[in-house]
Amino acid sequence: MDITTIEHYLSIEASHQLHQTTLPSPSAIQAASSSLPSPSSPTYLDSHSPSATISHITNDILPALTGQSRSGRYFGFVTGGVQPIAEWADNIVSRVDQNVQVHLPDQTVATEVEDAALRMLAGVLRLEEGDWRGRTFTTGATASNVLGLACGRETIIGRRIPDGEGTVGDLGLLRACRLAGIDDVQVLTSAGHSSLSKASSIVGLGRGSVIQLPLSSEEPWKLDLNAVEEHLQRPGVASIIAVSIGEVNTGRFAVQGLEDMQRLRALADKYGAWIHIDGAFGIFARALEKTQEFETLHKRVEGVELADSITVDGHKLLNVPYDCGVFFTRTASTLQSVFANPNAAYLSSSAQATIPSPLNIGIENSRRWRALPAYAVLLTEGRPGIARSLARMTRLSRGVARYLGKSEHYDLLPSGAGAQEDEIFMIVLFRARRKETNEVLVEKINDTREMYISGTSWQGEKAARVAVSSWKVDPEQDLKVVEAVLTTVAEGKSFDIAAVA
Ligand SMILES: *Cc1c(COP(=O)(O)O)cnc(C)c1O
Image 1 (tube, protein in one colour):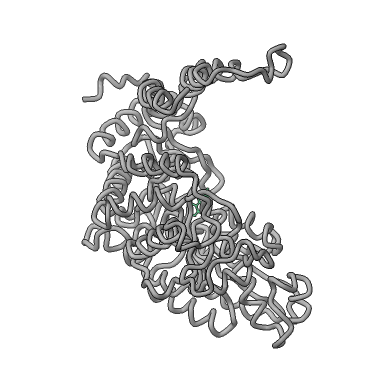
Image 2 (cartoon, protein in one colour; image 1 turned 135 degrees about the horizontal axis):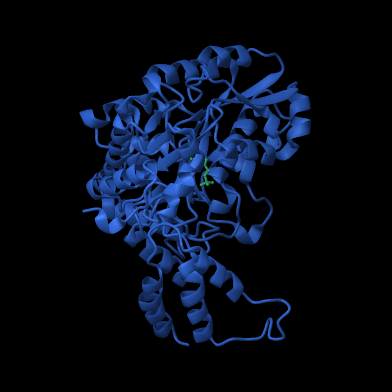
């Protein structure tokens, strides 16, 4: 089958089959599941024509997928949507199959495009350009957190190793710690994302090294700076401070703003600690327009530039396809100390190269040309387009919060000072007041198939969570549907989309 026929199928059949708003029907999933090749079938592992494969994928598999890229009302997890220009660019990436391993400026412009995209993203996030020379694309925020903890570990232990003994990357963690006189490494955080513990395990610190230091049980996302200071004073312990800039359950921020970040910076400098920002989605608040509407959010994310490293997700609010994350640190040499791929003469770039080869600053050697979809979005949307898309997400979230706040059926969470509308970026947490309704709330809402949300818990009880993350969102139209769904579910009625004007 030639390429034009494949494109014909992709454009016509695939779009026809990808119609669901949120979840596929249970019967579509069942049908897709039974259409998969069975090891007990006599024809298992036989060959099939490309057209048979295409028709199986379009007719059986596509109808059994979630509609997160098709709808602005898929509010589960934080998935992001896909900007059409990013989808187009992602297909180009597959077509040209560049391996962005070595920076080869005389042979391909691919690594230069990556670097341009990283610089543009830093600009959109209002990070001073010259300060973030250690930058690379990753597979997502989890991978970026691995890089952050690895760079932190490299630096905070490294600076206590006697001169001439080597780096953590060369010596390994055990020998490095012995030479540095360190018995323990701790990661201090508040409501740190679960992937921070996973990253701690991967880089050899252990999940147990992550210490939660919440300011209070009412506001667990806020970092207790006094407790941080106490922990930094522990003798023989090296520390990484991991700041949740956007806590995934409530969407709130670990610090109040610039003053908190300045205090953390001073503490980190005094005790030789590393500051890592997990800004997977929350850092995008910096890309909002600087108007009164978003003033509080801008305040909460001020001072991020004082950190040593930053995690950013691409496949969430930048709305590029999976998988894409970004990592920033101040110098490329910090990354090279961990990730240099040594002694492979055939993989070397030219000596005068200004852009480091990706294989020496990240996990993979061979990898996808992950930057192109991000580059396409950054170029097409620019700061104004990205800000408009984020504003739509924020406005819908705040509209939902306003409805919940007034509703007799629901409680907007968290209550108290943190509940103020201007603190809301794109996550809204709530629960039903009636206990029986709350038990089945998420299920009932998702059963409507007109919006999809994630279940979670808040202070020991079930809660529901709306995360608005797609460029497709229409604050007015989608709010009407959300209000109608929430009202009918609370009243125990069945939902009819046709009744929503
Ligand atoms: C989503 C998320 C992660 C993990 O991101 P992946 O892209 O799924 O690896 C880490 N931290 C925060 C704050 C997140 O929201």
